[in-house]
Length: 144
Image (tube, rainbow, N blue to C red; front, side, top):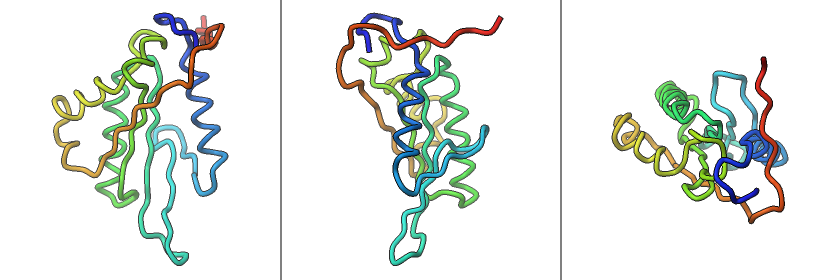
C-alpha cells in the first residue's frame, strides 16, 4: 500500500480480506444484503455460537450504519450470537479513498449515532496494512 493520502483503491483490500476468510475452514460467505461472513463455533460437533462479520472498507462510511443494522437484526433474530465489524485503522484509512470508514468513525457511530449498538455483543476490529509498497493498490474503475 502506497502511504500517500487517497492513493490506493479499497477493492484490493476487500478482496484480500474475503480471500483470507474463504481460505479458512468454516467461514461461509453470505449473499449481498446479508452479513458478509458467518462461522459456527462448535464444541463436540455441536454449534455453541455463531459469529457474524461485516467487512467495511468501501469508500462510503455511511454503510457502517447499514452493517450495524444487519448485525443488530441478526442478533435479535438469533441468526448470530456475536457481531464483528472490520474497518481500517485511522492510520490506514488515510491512504484509501476519501470517505473510507475508519476505527474512530465506527466507534463514533456506535457510541453516538446508533447508541443501541452498545447493548449488543459487538466487536470492532481495526485492520492495518503490513507495510508500505512502491506503488498504489489499483483503484476501481467507475462505470460511465
